[in-house]
Structure formats: structure tokens, C-alpha cells
Length: 78
Image (cartoon, rainbow, N blue to C red):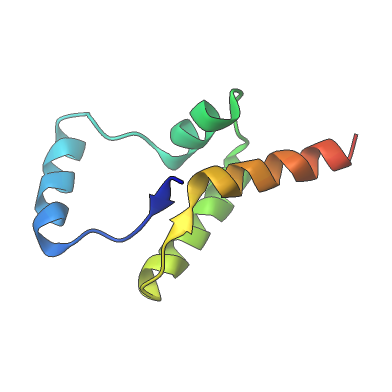
């Protein structure tokens, strides 16, 4: 399970530093790595909104499960 949660106070400063150093990866990039192909911008944006909502509500979200659900949905349309 690859759950995503909001940063703790001590992690937020480190995350900003890593981002400034160029070590951050976009949600779209991470999702594309999981899927094995390039995820569409709109799908990554939807995932971003879901992650932000989960963080605001103190929940976690499983990114691998989210990608798998998207792939299953795409396969059902074929």
C-alpha cells in the first residue's frame, strides 16, 4: 500500500527544501511510474484534488489503489 498523507510539521520544511533542490516529483510522474504509461493531465489533477481532500480531512489515500481503479475503468471501456 502506498498511502499518501499530509506532512507532519517537521516534514514540511524538509519537503520544501527537497523541492527547491529539484528532488520533488509530480503526482502525474509518480502515477505514471505506477501505471507503466503516461497518465493524462486530467487524471493526475483529479488525484491531486482527492489527495488534498484526504489531507484536509485527516485521512490517507492509497495512490496505487487509485491508479489501479483508473486502469480498471479504462480497460472496461475497451
